[in-house]
Length: 128
Image (cartoon, rainbow, N blue to C red; front, side):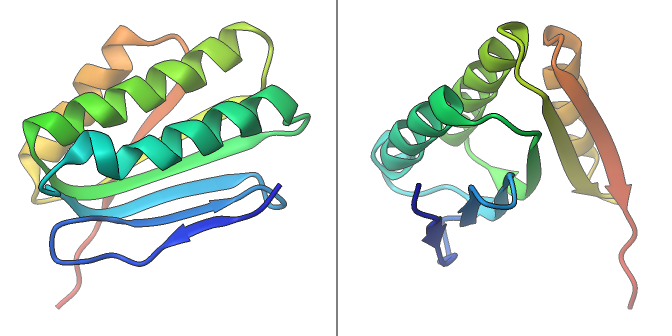
Protein backbone atom coordinates (compact mmCIF):
# COMPACT_ATOMS: atom_id res chain seq x y z
CA UNK A 1 0.00 0.00 0.00
CA UNK A 2 1.25 3.49 -0.86
CA UNK A 3 2.27 5.98 1.79
CA UNK A 4 -0.15 8.91 2.17
CA UNK A 5 1.57 12.22 2.77
CA UNK A 6 0.21 15.77 2.77
CA UNK A 7 2.22 18.79 3.81
CA UNK A 8 0.59 21.14 6.29
CA UNK A 9 -0.93 24.42 5.23
CA UNK A 10 -2.04 27.39 7.28
CA UNK A 11 -5.38 25.69 7.97
CA UNK A 12 -4.74 21.97 7.51
CA UNK A 13 -2.50 19.53 9.35
CA UNK A 14 0.45 17.55 8.05
CA UNK A 15 -0.60 13.97 7.34
CA UNK A 16 1.93 11.15 7.16
CA UNK A 17 0.41 7.67 6.97
CA UNK A 18 3.32 5.23 6.62
CA UNK A 19 2.03 1.69 6.11
CA UNK A 20 5.48 0.06 6.18
CA UNK A 21 6.27 1.49 9.62
CA UNK A 22 2.70 1.09 10.85
CA UNK A 23 2.70 4.72 11.99
CA UNK A 24 -0.07 7.15 11.10
CA UNK A 25 0.53 10.81 11.99
CA UNK A 26 -1.65 13.91 11.89
CA UNK A 27 0.10 17.05 13.16
CA UNK A 28 -0.71 20.74 13.28
CA UNK A 29 -3.85 22.84 13.07
CA UNK A 30 -7.04 21.61 11.45
CA UNK A 31 -9.60 24.13 10.28
CA UNK A 32 -9.79 23.65 6.51
CA UNK A 33 -12.66 25.32 4.69
CA UNK A 34 -14.31 21.94 4.09
CA UNK A 35 -13.08 19.37 6.65
CA UNK A 36 -15.14 16.44 5.27
CA UNK A 37 -13.55 16.98 1.83
CA UNK A 38 -10.07 17.28 3.36
CA UNK A 39 -10.45 14.09 5.42
CA UNK A 40 -12.26 12.03 2.76
CA UNK A 41 -9.09 10.58 1.19
CA UNK A 42 -7.73 9.83 4.65
CA UNK A 43 -10.85 7.79 5.46
CA UNK A 44 -10.62 5.87 2.17
CA UNK A 45 -6.92 5.12 2.75
CA UNK A 46 -7.47 4.17 6.40
CA UNK A 47 -10.31 1.74 5.60
CA UNK A 48 -8.15 -0.06 3.00
CA UNK A 49 -5.16 -0.11 5.34
CA UNK A 50 -7.09 -1.47 8.32
CA UNK A 51 -8.55 -4.24 6.17
CA UNK A 52 -5.06 -5.48 5.25
CA UNK A 53 -2.81 -4.54 8.21
CA UNK A 54 -1.36 -7.48 10.11
CA UNK A 55 1.01 -5.62 12.42
CA UNK A 56 0.85 -3.04 15.21
CA UNK A 57 -0.65 0.29 14.19
CA UNK A 58 0.49 3.38 16.07
CA UNK A 59 -1.46 6.58 15.57
CA UNK A 60 0.22 9.84 16.56
CA UNK A 61 -2.17 12.78 16.81
CA UNK A 62 -0.55 16.10 17.64
CA UNK A 63 -3.16 18.71 16.83
CA UNK A 64 -2.74 22.16 18.32
CA UNK A 65 -6.16 23.44 17.24
CA UNK A 66 -9.17 22.05 15.39
CA UNK A 67 -12.58 23.44 14.59
CA UNK A 68 -15.82 21.59 15.31
CA UNK A 69 -16.07 19.96 11.88
CA UNK A 70 -12.47 18.74 12.08
CA UNK A 71 -13.14 17.35 15.56
CA UNK A 72 -15.98 15.26 14.15
CA UNK A 73 -13.77 13.98 11.31
CA UNK A 74 -10.97 13.05 13.71
CA UNK A 75 -13.46 11.32 16.00
CA UNK A 76 -14.86 9.35 13.06
CA UNK A 77 -11.32 8.22 12.22
CA UNK A 78 -10.76 7.19 15.82
CA UNK A 79 -14.00 5.16 15.71
CA UNK A 80 -12.67 3.30 12.64
CA UNK A 81 -9.50 2.54 14.59
CA UNK A 82 -11.52 1.40 17.59
CA UNK A 83 -13.59 -0.92 15.39
CA UNK A 84 -10.36 -2.47 14.09
CA UNK A 85 -9.09 -2.81 17.68
CA UNK A 86 -12.33 -4.50 18.74
CA UNK A 87 -11.93 -6.90 15.81
CA UNK A 88 -8.49 -7.90 17.07
CA UNK A 89 -6.09 -5.39 15.50
CA UNK A 90 -3.19 -4.14 17.61
CA UNK A 91 -3.94 -0.40 17.63
CA UNK A 92 -2.51 2.29 19.91
CA UNK A 93 -3.50 5.96 19.68
CA UNK A 94 -1.22 8.62 21.17
CA UNK A 95 -2.86 12.03 21.63
CA UNK A 96 -0.11 14.63 22.07
CA UNK A 97 -0.77 18.12 23.34
CA UNK A 98 1.34 21.04 24.46
CA UNK A 99 1.32 21.23 28.24
CA UNK A 100 -0.10 24.78 28.09
CA UNK A 101 -2.93 23.80 25.71
CA UNK A 102 -5.65 22.87 28.18
CA UNK A 103 -8.40 22.61 25.55
CA UNK A 104 -6.51 19.97 23.54
CA UNK A 105 -5.71 18.05 26.73
CA UNK A 106 -9.40 18.05 27.64
CA UNK A 107 -10.35 17.00 24.11
CA UNK A 108 -7.95 14.03 24.29
CA UNK A 109 -9.27 13.06 27.71
CA UNK A 110 -12.87 13.20 26.46
CA UNK A 111 -11.98 11.01 23.48
CA UNK A 112 -10.22 8.53 25.78
CA UNK A 113 -13.27 8.27 28.08
CA UNK A 114 -15.49 7.19 25.17
CA UNK A 115 -13.20 4.49 23.82
CA UNK A 116 -11.82 1.10 24.72
CA UNK A 117 -8.90 1.22 22.25
CA UNK A 118 -5.45 1.90 23.75
CA UNK A 119 -5.47 5.70 23.96
CA UNK A 120 -2.66 7.66 25.62
CA UNK A 121 -2.89 11.38 26.39
CA UNK A 122 0.67 12.74 26.39
CA UNK A 123 1.83 16.20 27.48
CA UNK A 124 4.66 17.68 25.44
CA UNK A 125 6.85 20.32 27.02
CA UNK A 126 7.52 23.52 25.11
CA UNK A 127 11.06 24.82 25.35
CA UNK A 128 11.91 28.40 24.59
